[in-house]
Amino acid sequence: MNNTLGILAVILASALWGTTGTAASFAPSLSPLLIGSLAMGIGGILQCILAISKIIKERYLLIKHLCLLIVGAIAVMIYPLAFYSAMRLSGVTIGTVVSIGSAPIFSAIIEYADGDFRLTRQWLIGATFGILGIILLSFSENNSAIVQNNHIILGILLGLIAGFTYALYSWSARQLMLKGISTKSAMGATFGCGGILLIPVMVFTGFGLFESLTNIIVCAYMALIPMFMGYLCYGFGLSKISTSTATTITLLEPVIAAVLAILVVDEMLPLIGCIGILFILICLILITIDINK
Image (tube, rainbow, N blue to C red; front, side, top):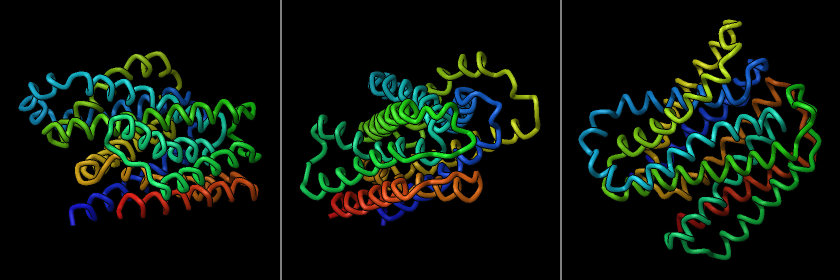
């Protein structure tokens, strides 16, 4: 029952996160660094405020495992900057699929290095489909109006950085929970510290935020709904299921993002890109079945 609730919570988080790329496309005048730092920074600080009593109560445990907290906070800081830049450079569909599609593989590698994951043939087959899917997307032509200078390869590289940092902060938060720290404290402290680290980015890239009501609405929506509410759901899910399972389930996010990008942003994805998304979905199914055996 706990596993089921955890899985449902991560599915809900993925659905909320899947709207971020489309939402960001409505504020093309804003720097992706500003959008990312505001969304994750404010969302993270709100999580910290919500959990402040728990954090104070468990402060000695957090200090004891300060290295994990620092790793998670730095990863939280880097992730949105890489993720939103990847979407701006390669388009919502490719940027999201590469970032989220690579996260389960990075997550499994991190857990394997930590001795907390067992490689199986089915997992390797699933991971292969995921990698092939990302490669096919890399070679697909993107006709989105918001792609800047068609820097798809650079966008994909940034997407891989986003995928790695996403897996890293998920792992570190999960490790804090396994050390006896509550979900609220682990997520609040990790994202709160990451949010504080993002404040200088907000300050230096903040020009243009108040130029239009649309810009303000987009940033407010992304900070409160996908980031704040989404990560509350994700934190609950992480307390019930493993990091690799959680990051694998979030492969649903790029599917939602791709559908919204095609329907709302008018992005065009050719057949090779569609096959890439199909391969990533196969990866999701194979890895999820393997993990839950």
